[in-house]
Each structure stands twice: as structure tokens, then as C-alpha cells.
View 1: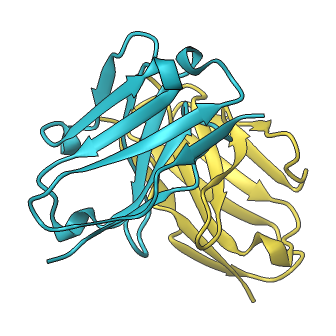
View 2: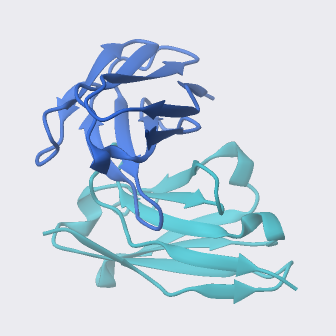
Length: 107
Length: 115
């Protein structure tokens, strides 16, 4: 089984800050990684797929990078609406493991 | 556009089973795997497995292999997830999703397991 380790688990930052969240896979997953944003009581919203492809309609301040086992989600200039929990998901092969999540708080 | 509409909230007793449905519209149902994901209160997302609606083939996360059954009815474009031998740890919101790395999710079904 592929394990996904996401860090940090919580993050507090100010409006306008640059924020980075990291996801590490226990083995290579090529670029088969997605990033989601989830707000309380809602289904996850896809931000990035295939490690670096921005989903249509997602603001350009979100970007993804990485391949193999190390991946990052970057928010270039944090906005108040970005307060949420963020998850990575690997989808290499048959499984679809999620990271543990990063709760992002706006100071 | 793609719509995934799930069945309503359920309350079950420990030891019982539950069957959640996910009705798809707006795309060719047999063309995409249907995944199931759950989220316990205050916890993260947990991937459970998928069904290939075309063949009926399934793949389950090891944690659920002996308790989950995923099926489909192609005549009504609906996928099902049945979980047996429920315990309080199964209290969660259950989601269906069209594939992995996807923008298409159901609205979620809250399952409460309580005596």
C-alpha cells in the first residue's frame, strides 16, 4: 500500500502570505497526485490534478509541483477565503490514498 | 453537467448493514470508475475502494475488504456501497466520486451507528 504523509497538519498564516503544503508518498507515484480544498460540511473541491494541472475555475494563486515522491501545493498570496483543510490524494495504480490533511487558518 | 446524487442519511444499530446509493447523470455511467470515500466526524478523508461500472469489477482498501461490497445497476446509472457489521467507528459521511483526482463528488450521506 502507498502511504501519503502530509505536512504540516496545521498552519496559520496572514492574508498575502505565500503558503506551502507538502505531501510525500511512500513510493513513486509519478505525477498521479491531486490536491483538494475542503470546507466544513462540504464535499472536497478539486484544485490540482496530475500534480501540477490547475482545475478550471480555480484561482491562479494555487499551484502544484513535484513528481515521484515529493509534492507541494503553494498558495502564492493567501486570501481570507482560503481558510479550509487541504488534502492530497495519490491515484497511481488501483488505490486512492489521501494524506492526513492540513488545516489552514488565516491570522 | 455531471451530477452524483446520493441517498439520504441513515441511522443503524451496531452489527447491522447499510447500503448507500449514488445516482449518476450527465455522463456515460459505464465510462468512469466510481470511488467511495468516507469522513468520520472531525477526521480526514479515507478512501474505501472503487467499482468499474462497465465490468462490475471492484477493488477495496485492505481495511474494508471483508465488510464492504460495491455494486452497480447500469440500467439506472446507480452505484451502491454496502458496509456490514457496523460499529460506532463507521459513523461518518460517505461520498461517491467519479474517479480519483476528480471534481465530481456526491453530496455525501451521513451514517450514524448507535445503539
